[in-house]
Image 1 (tube, rainbow, N blue to C red):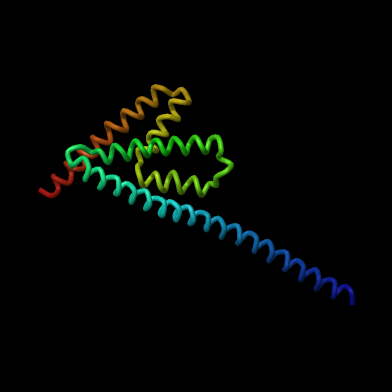
Image 2: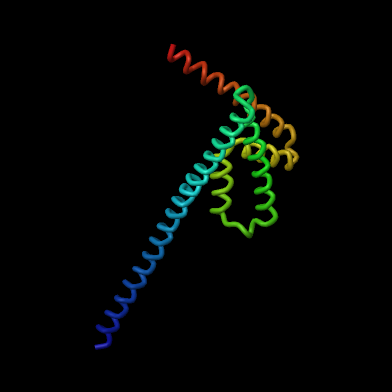
Amino acid sequence: MCPQTCSATVTRLEISYANQRVRRELTAIILGLMNTALGYVLVFVGGGLGAAARHWVNRTTLALVGPDYPAGTLIVNISGSIAMGMLAGWFAFRGETTTAEQRLFLTTGVLGGFTTFSAFALDTRLMWERHDVVPALVYAAASVILSVVGLIAGMFTVRALLS
């Protein structure tokens, strides 16, 4: 009697073990997908908040300064760079107090929606800090000059296509 009972028990245990392993693997896959999806949601929400804040700054400075000078953009770029520097410093010295999700929400999300200039400033500073002075200067100059040239080229292309 034992060989049949033992065999059935072993078979049940094997199936149970296989199901647990499959469940663990599926759970890991699902959690990985949820983390990826959560990252996109965090960037989406943070970006929306940052863009709304940028719009508020632009409207406020337009009302205060007028349309002749891009004061809103200047304020956004400088304040975004200050905020990025403060966050980078906090993460470097107190990073264990924040999660990857919080960092993603604040930097790529909120500040990314507020200004991409803050990311440019951080990249330049990190290159400088690594003593990559010439590449940092080339990167900074190329970013500013090529961005303006790209804007002009884009405007020219649309004007050429529409006229």
